[in-house]
Amino acid sequence: MAGIILVTGGCRSGKSRFALEKADFAGGKKIFLATCPHIDPEMDERIQKHRQERIDWSTIEEELELSHIFDSIPLGSVVLLDCLSLWINNLMFDANKKDLYLTQDRIKDICSSLGEHILGSKAKNVFIVTNEVGMGLVPENKEGRLYRDLLGICNQTFASIANEVYFLVSGIPVRIKSSRDNGL
Image 1 (spheres, rainbow, N blue to C red):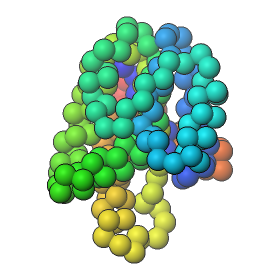
Image 2: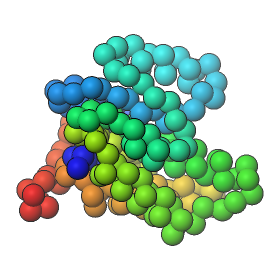
Image 3: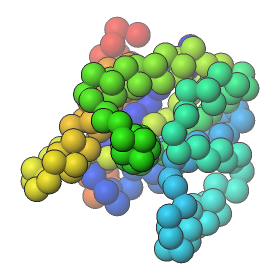
């Protein structure tokens, strides 16, 4: 069963860097699972910069279907999933293209299924990065409020199964859950 380490915080709080540094210390094949879509030249530059930071990592880019990837993870691998925030965005965008509506119950089912695939994978550790978007102002539009709510449900789902949870503030990690809290 894979150990899950959830890393959350605000935008540009140092989440990805922290998760990458922690994951680098774990032994095993390193796999970076990227959910970021290629949407414009500026984003492509960011993606390229991040790839250069992960020279010793294998990168898998997948915007939507994450569960199946964990079915084929090599034994003892260390996976860094970056990030749930973009994944939820991608799921909403994909649903909108298909004239579908993601409900809170549906996103909970999707996240629970992904969690089961992660826990059942052969990975040694899975580091998951996500944004905490529920601490600011209430979004002014329906779509923004739905995104905030769906990501909040997703984050709660993964925090509940994680062995460790870290919250980053201005680059400073604060551990808010450890395996000792779970009785493990």
